[in-house]
Image (tube, rainbow over all chains, first blue to last red):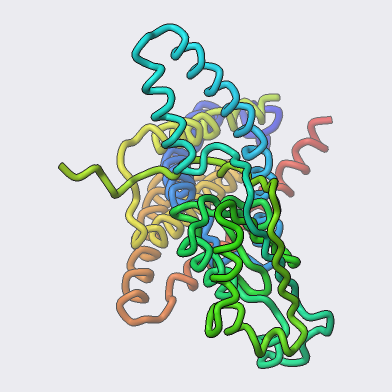
Length: 257
Length: 120
């Protein structure tokens, strides 16, 4: 070390060496403190996660996009896993005598929950925004199709006997929200864009006339239709609604005794 | 090489500290994060000051440890008083320590460069 230190004379060397070791030891002690504080701060910061509210819009947009891609990938795996599940159910059913009944029960439950795609006759309601873009916020109220329009139509469809409903490929089930965030409508938290195609399997004639009742939901859209919003209805013999991607998870609700 | 060797002990110290910090149970409550940050700066400042003194052969353990303690305590006190008064007094500690850290790094760098040149 002597070659690197500011050349102490031979007589001073033992004392200098002692001093040198001493400063290294002290530094090591403070280094331990330094390390502990670094680690603690790091841990605290990590446990707080990533405060979203403090991020810039650009960062948030990028994050959202990233998350959307993750969601898409996960959604793609659902179909695969569901067919696998079906296969297991079939195998299980083949093995036991009792499960023939259980199997048909299960099928009914899955239909009710929206876990199987369904097909049948029914009605298709197509709604589209006006071709002219709205000029103001107040104007937008009349020239666009809104989330509440869809909610009212879905509600009327259930009331008139619909057995399964989907909006732009999103199955409408018991806990499906229809809401609007800014300029887009979300169904099952998925963006849907105009034209909105509400597909309802059920008694076509009844559902169609229920929607068209005087004072009914389409009638209430009069001002919008006058401003250019387009609403079409068609009865069809073969309609298909897809399954919901996943069952809800219950964190709060338990079966009551 | 010998220079690197002399820095080994402090580096090992930091490594042990980091390990301890992660191994320790419990969490620092949010209210104390600021104190921890100031303590971090004080420790870093002291370490660099010690390194500089060691390289300059002016190291004195009493000066070193008393400086470390008073700096940390004073920084903590400033933070505490600032919190009570609603004035971010800890910024004073952050600025002073920050400036000194840069200052000391510059001096340590000069010393090291000088030695490496002379060693050649």
